Amino acid sequence: MSVDRSAELEALVGSPAGPPAIAPEVVNRTMIRHWTEAMGDTNPVYGSEQAATEAGFEGVIAPPTMLQAWTMQGLTWTLELAEARERGTLDDSTPNAVMMGLLDQEGLTSVVATNCEQEYARPLRPGERLISTQVIEAISAEKKTGLGSGRFITTRTDYVAVPDDQVGPDADPAELAAHGEPVGSMRFRILKFRPPAQANEVAAEKPPRPRPAMTEDNRFFFEGARQGQLLIQRCTSCGTLRHPPLPACAVCQSFDWDTVEASGRGELFSYVVVHYPQVPSFDYPLAIGLVLLEEGTRIVANVEGVDPSDLRIGMPLQAHMVAFDDELSMPVFRPVAEAAGVSRGE
Image 1: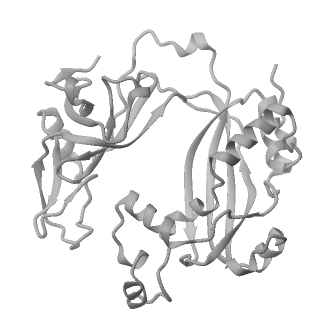
Image 2 (image 1 turned 120 degrees about the vertical axis):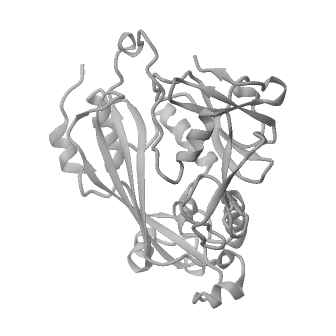
Image 3 (image 1 turned 45 degrees about the horizontal axis):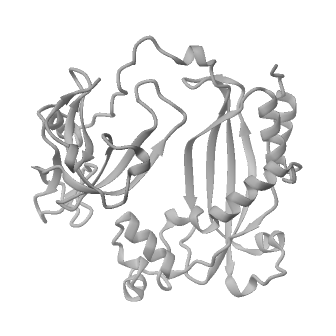
């Protein structure tokens, strides 16, 4: 039986989630290169000293969106944390652990991330080390959502940078945090919710697939899909293809564009398999792929016709248009041997 822990939760707002933490890795050019290649970010200030200085920086900088990446602990740390939790030796005295325990007592045992907001004070430079300090910024009253009733939890992480040579084996994270130079902050919001009873989760009829946000920039894509075409935006000034659609070309800044019809052939560049939370419109496990089209652009779409455990990076795929209803058609990718035709969604 769940209990109301509102007073105790409210008392935690404003508390540090835990002690300051030193990033496990120094900001370095190797990881910057890996990041920019994975993201397709060709801004030269991330790799060229000359380009960076000409842009007004002291030297090569790290992409601002890597802010959190420098402090992520990795798989080994995650597995060790899970083992400590199973053994009962995990430190449950931190405000963050206390908060999670109180939420569990309220029956809010499921969790899903909702959104993340980052602010940047200045770019990071190779040779710096990040120190992060996290605060429990807000805990909402219980709210009803499509997943179930729950509370939205907002934590704010503040980041400072120090030269790596100041971070010795006996360095005090709190002292470094107090004297470091602020470089950015991040608000991360999750929903801790009470999952509905299994009987209530089964719908008599699968609801329609959620409608995509339609704008003047992307309308052509969905209209083309209804005609069985996979259309990609092309800059008419420099010929650069881009997806998702944007109002201007990132290469030459031209606002002029037309479209080309892609073949639909490509290969699996990356993927994720979603198990939970589950939206009734979809079947699970749900494979979502980042597909590198042979034309050179990438597109995010469902991957079907293959067991998720058999997905492999580089797997040849072919798009086919699925009409989910009379108004919405979308490209879905299948392994080449199984892809053919236009089908009607179930």
